[in-house]
Image (cartoon, rainbow, N blue to C red):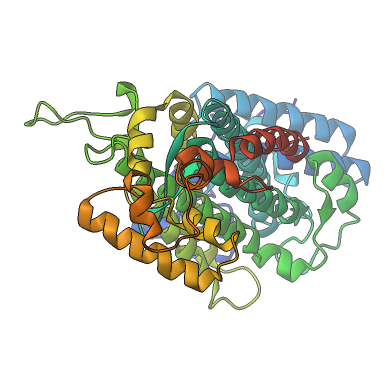
Length: 477
């Protein structure tokens, strides 16, 4: 390996204006250098940047731009730098602006002029676009793994509660009885759509811009397909102008992330309600809660509350990227340095929220009797009584009116429909007979009657859980 007398990653005498200083007659103002630098946050790209550089060097050697010895020196030098970064022994320098220049400068200090040849046929414009895509691709794969873990946790909890009856709500008012397992499967469906969106987004992330150079391509005889193969990209970008300036894939991810957080926030809202003294539907284990500094009785559902709050920052990350891109002419502009932090924040927030939920959901403990008692309040079987009358030949609108009068009586007497006597019910319709209590007015009769795909009957919930496991296998195959 070629060596240099300069210490690793130190500034050479002619580098006071950065790696691009030839055009400039004075050094960049210190404040401007710090203000325009991105290394403080884009250093998290180091693995992807080094992987991209190794692939680029390998390709340059294949087409004869680099010798095999130069390629090997570059690869060995980059591998050493990667090990130092991972060991925490690498000094990141703001005066070198970004992760790319920090690594390239260090490489040049290590192996001499060969390090300067690495940038042949590429620009920081296509380099950073490639790094972001490689990074986001890895993060999507990790997030998909967390989604799968959460989905399996939901299915496990649902399987234990196919017969657990609870009130279903509209307008947060008791509507009809459902099973807790059925409700959990509604959450599962939200996450399935999230999975499908991320998998679809990944296809557009996995296209390689490297080789587009600054904006117009390069005069060197590069082999972009070979580089793409080395980096695991499914395709190369078709237009160099678009390739270096496109951030649609990041916006699309943030949109998918915002939807994930919206779903987790809805789930959190229900958990917050359900754990309150007014509901008491479920218990969240203590390890996911905190107490009060002044009220000793408090057990606060901090994890769901925090996730509900964090949804707002991810929504903001999406708006930030949309606003960032809306006024940019082709091709690359310095504005795009601002694309990373909203993307990083969305990734970190979604990952953390999914990890918390994946741990918490399987540990939930439903209060089965309290759920059942709540389903008995609010006349949740009123629709079943109307359906009972319809099956005896009454038009639905007439049945609706009959049941409404029966509910009014129940309200006046503070009794559920099932607690009214047969004589009381028959004053509204003589078609109501003794079988109404078994066929329409019990909670079990109500949920069992919804015996079709998508329905809440225990039989259908069990079948839905079986299908869900198969769908997961297919989704993550």
